[in-house]
Image (cartoon, rainbow, N blue to C red; front, side, top):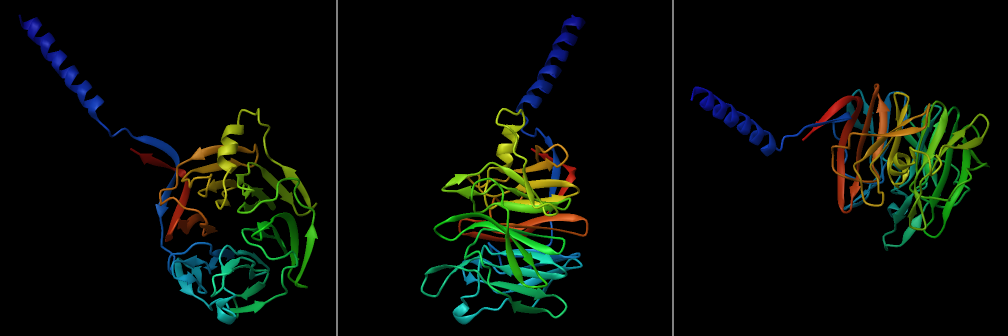
Length: 342
């Protein structure tokens, strides 16, 4: 009798434990990489702003939100956002812009191109370029970009030169590339990649070379990646064959527009943007193997036209838009941490 009672008691205990396990919704998944909310941008929420870095200082401004086009500019210095001289507004604010481009070379920042609507609501693409001198806190207009008016381009600074290409002018897509020489304020067209024209692509510098990826053309999202070596002015395709075992991860990582594509700790990261729906995903690029690996999703709200910057040994992503919602939050990316999600 005692044996039967003991057997029944054990059965009840096991059953209770099983029910507790089955009924729990607290399953925890651990993924590589973590996002930590950081100090927000000082200005109002916005999209389509520009950013560039000089040393450890990050400069950001311009853009658009529900109130219109913005002229304010800020510097992130020592963990604090400080206001700078505003961008020149022009006559009837027609110099303000969103989806412009920016890079830094020789201790100065360069901002140009972009898009706006004038007071009559007429869309106009821009070809003007400006230099920001941080020592004087001053903006100076430069020669117009000779490649035509456009927006949603990519640009980077490598060594003593700036490099700019792709984009859209409201009618046509571009696949050309140009080199900017600050000493003479001149643009020179250079050889371009052997791929599709595009807008809304992403680019950054890794190990002295520019990595260009994604974007869209004629309503289609592009799945390719190109590497530009400025010392030889040559382009190399880093797109795997469609039958490669890693092609699926590559395509999911790269097939998006208006994303952020940045380098950090000798790896590349592609995050956010439209693919074609807005996505929170982030993928890591190993530049030694050109393999892509999915990491922890962005933990802020889904968005496109965000900005990224690296300073103080840390990488950050923030701002941007989702429809009519504009953001001013900034998140630090910690790729070596683990993120726990339920």
